[in-house]
Length: 181
Image (cartoon, rainbow, N blue to C red; front, side, top):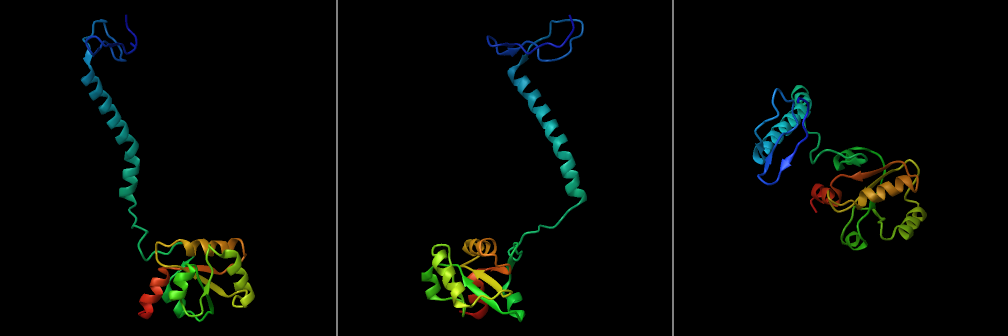
């Protein structure tokens, strides 16, 4: 009787009596061991993996591209200190660090505006008259790993509607390194 057999497992002797396959003349196939069945499945999985990855590997070989990230790569909205110092634009520096860090040292003329005291500090900033429409605003915090400057910059753009807001790449450390402090 020919056809496709269902997998029948004999737990008594740990053999598979007949895996899914076409039969020929006889239904008396010798059983496959569990180990042999496992090897067949691994081989089939390997073939599927190669077939699935082959187009991607070929594409990578045909169109190699350089790594696009490096420590010098700017994220959207970031600017480098050298670029800012070369420009003749007026800049409003905003320090997004804690008040303690701000008091220990900051960019000359920088205004403190951080997430912890946003409401009070933002009102002070607007009352101070330091910000004018069209003036470039650059926010900084302690280092490359500090995200406070990105959060403050995003909040200034979205909630306050200030368009020219950027983040200083390297933060306060970049300033200190450039000016040798």
